[in-house]
Image (cartoon, rainbow, N blue to C red):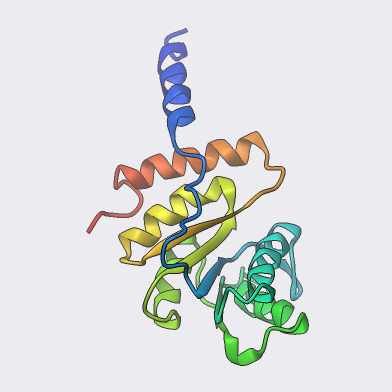
Length: 180
């Protein structure tokens, strides 16, 4: 039972962490960065498709001029998440000139870091799952981005939510990615 108190304190701390930041109203971004998720032989996974569809909706509403899709390739994959995501959006009417594909990243930090040269100066919507958003925003801002949240809702497992809260806490403490 020695572990009960530390576990209870950890769960309490994790429960207190932010779910997702609210969407900003002032100086709305004209670009979005879609963080990668799995793809299967060039087709986005359901989770990745939800993120891409959220950016596509912003595009169709006339709220974006540019969409950057970020994500590398797992060992043995023929396609990267960035390639699969850009192709998905292009097939749905987003002009290739409005898309940029980052294809080398293998983590949230790399998604953000390697997308930096593909982004225009100014604010950017970060498009990712709601449980992933606090950590993604923290890391984006650590890299100097004027990042705004566009959380994608869905049914997420408790395991995924707890994992993201723990990773947020580690990032916040500077354990996983050093503060500048």
